Amino acid sequence: MKSNVIRIGIAFGLIISSSFAQSNSLPITFEAPKSWTLLESKNQRGATYFLYEIGNNQNKQSKTIPSNALITIYKVPANESFADADAIVGSKLKNATAIVAGQDGESWKTYIYVTYEGKQQLIILYGIGMINGYGAEAMISFPHVAVRDNKVFKILTLDSSNTKSESGVGLLCNPSSVTEMVNQFNEFCSKLKISGRTTFASRVKLIDPPPGGKYYRKVN
Image (cartoon, rainbow, N blue to C red; front, side, top):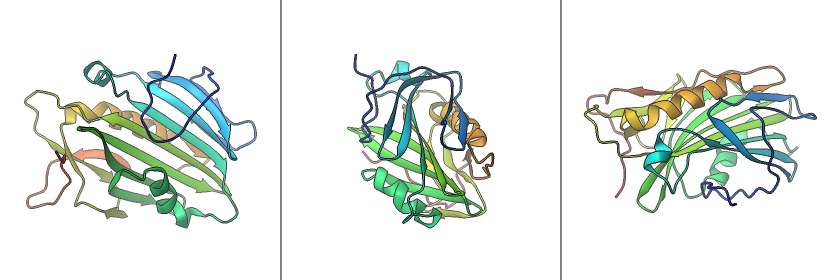
């Protein structure tokens, strides 16, 4: 049976099961939330990929587009460094639009992207870190479901003093559609460690729309 996976362009073949993953050869550790189901894992071109399906209420409303997490760990090639983080992430999300990015020191960076599956907007939360020649990347992708409720829309952005915005302060969204995924992304990234170290100040958050502020909204 084929797994429902976002079309980011990564293919997998080996299916395993675990809630905690650690490479035997790389000093990188992470802990997946209990609601994540590990679908596949594969070593490819010097990197190890872990693909999860995220169990949440949004899957009930968007049956054809699941929520997924893709974790990548690797030894950084000699010709790359953390200075190439933007290019590395951008090369993997070629059809997505960068919304905002925030950097933590000299080793970690967080991004918010959007893309579309037909008319369905997908939100992508992405974190990348490089320490002592090793790299780790965490990507969560989920449908921005149009929940019908009376909640006031918020701006999805980053809690960082060092941000770079492509479309104003962030992404306009319904908090009912994104809060659960934001919490899970923040929880995961806070526990993602390279050589026993992590820095995660650029947490994803929801704020009230600032007066006169620019932000990205869904394109029909």
